[in-house]
Image (cartoon, rainbow, N blue to C red):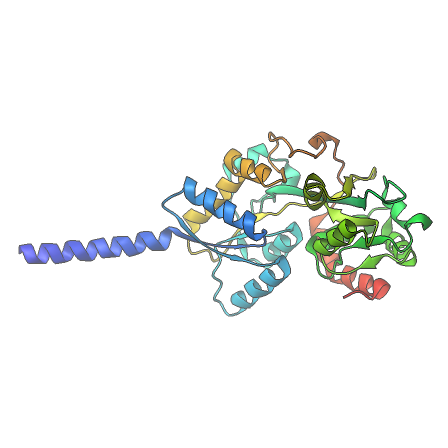
Length: 327
């Protein structure tokens, strides 16, 4: 064998190995995290796994799901991993056979209610929906029923479940609760409650004083309060709903080993410390809560059935639109 042939063969093998390594070590992430959070998550993962590059796409969960569904229909799905707002969307992908199970060893540190028992998806944080109010409001609410009282008439804002996944989950939790049901939403409508857009619009209305009370995700209100905004947040006595920003691996993932490492990372103590630093309640059992939040054990959660919520989702949207005429 000539030296020239050995050199050519070695270069060919090196090139092949290099291309293979590049293909296996580039992870494609689709996420609905806010841009800053998404960037810090990717940066932390790459620091912990310097041999893995990450290409990521960020958009709202609804738009991201539309994009993903279109890619799947064309048999051209690009994502390896999803990190999106709610478990209902993940459950729909699971039932459609678009996810693959992975039993991460990190799950032993999590409440079984926060992940799919077969390992199709895992909650990474707790984002609750409670009541926020402008501190100049006449009433300090303590119950969901307070939003339907005469003193709150025309002063309540809430995100639309036609737009927000968290709002749709919140609606499912309340309408399936025997204490509230659809009568509660009809009472809100009769109290001139405004339903439009997402949580950002509610926050803006409360901070500006345009509205006095609102249904709102916890971290938005608590962050704004810390910045000095005239806003406070209460966990109603009946309980709060929550989204868990679950992570999952797509069935057609092309970079499976890297995808498993990403899931393990966001569920690990290191990944959950990042969640805490971003101002969210970590899903990990052993982690504390951010400053301004009550103790984890004191937060009462409304019962929630993910599969039932998925089954009822379109019917819930239709009934909500019939009541509010909201877009």
